[in-house]
Image 1: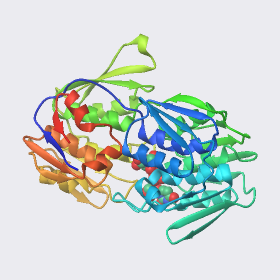
Image 2 (image 1 turned 45 degrees about the vertical axis):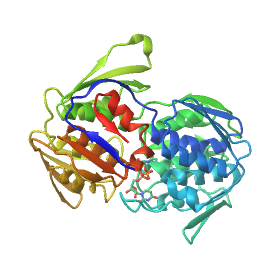
Image 3 (image 1 turned 120 degrees about the vertical axis):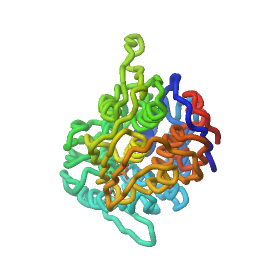
Length: 420
Ligand code: UD1
């Protein structure tokens, strides 16, 4: 699949930001813990959601869409085996391990494997399950777990892994007694998962800090939950608006993205909230790059609250035409600078040595035929294509659809010509 972008126009207009992918994927896995209807409002219609719902169907759940609402009934989702094909399509499939174990005390899944951004093992997940009383057997690319004993009540992760934190939470909400998770990830999507589970009757506290306490309950009830907007999608279109020297307004739900505002401002963008008291908790954020983009001396990605690795490629693209030199250091995934070679084809001056990229701003990028290597590199290429002179053809564009709803149409809404 190819997406073609005609660069050079200044972005303008208003865009609503879709619900957060990294929040909805663990919620979809969590529905296995509940036998009543769960309605996820503002659910993004993206390929990773399709992949997670096809797994739900494989284990027996009913899944329907009603506009932007995803309605799930997992009353009959008693399956505890997930096939290789389904698991291979989305890495978050590993989160079904926690929820299937919570529901059935046993679970088997083909390992999702590595991907182009790095090896992405699941050893922290497995070790945590074992501490909590599960036995895990890994062979032939498959992992089978069963709960054999009560296990410890305290588990500490060696690194604040987002997925391992979510898996421990999913495993523990129906578990007997109290589970204390230490060195937990603090990402906003973890906080959202906990709010969602609380809306179903789960008892947990401490999310957003490094210790999360979970007190097991007997059952969860149905819920209707409205997803917050996706912070990385906001940054993508905001970077695009600013990179083209334009100005655009973004409608977001449930968050004011203060941290993201700071990142954009560091790069010289002007970011303003447009007061709209009647619409809270929605808000409108205006982003402008009319005064030009400037280099950011040093960015280092890391677990929240550090700079998000998912925004790293976007900033590589944004800063490639900034005035001055920027250094970006990647500390989360080992292979996240693959996009640099594609940006170089478009005229960017980026040097990568190990986990560090040095970006020297150039005055122009030109349209090229390039290739997305992962979801976020694809999004970064959209940003670069919007600010390049001429036409850019991005191959492997299906990777972008894993996380972005109708990207070409959204770009058109911002006045940037794109088609798929
Ligand atoms: C999640 C996000 C992803 C984001 C990442 C880091 C979802 C669906 N995906 O991925 O978009 O880029 O957080 O913010 O929410 N690791 C191990 N062993 C493990 C688990 C992780 O070595 O058992 C390593 C990984 O290889 C990586 C680092 O820990 O180097 C962080 O991974 P983790 O936080 O688990 O990311 P994901 O949950 O996979």
